[in-house]
Figure 1: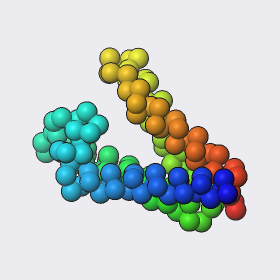
Figure 2: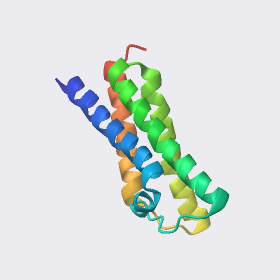
Figure 3: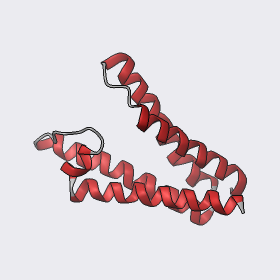
Length: 126
């Protein structure tokens, strides 16, 4: 029962990340505003912002849904690693570059990493 709940939560979070990735391509101004990005740069910066962030969310979401579907550990570990490094880099950007400490984002990232690792341990087929 608990394993089914963990897999369901992984699927739901994966779908949310997947949709955010699609929204970065469809409506970057609105989607960016949800992350505190109020100005979308022009030229190559716009391409990089939309392409990099959109693909980040799209791929993490896809990997999480594949993890839930296949129960193979690699699909759990890849998004866990990306989200862990994201949280770490947020802390570094706060400490070194005077960014706002993004408590709500860091907390969600750590919670999802925890979900992924626990679900992998309890359900994986390797």
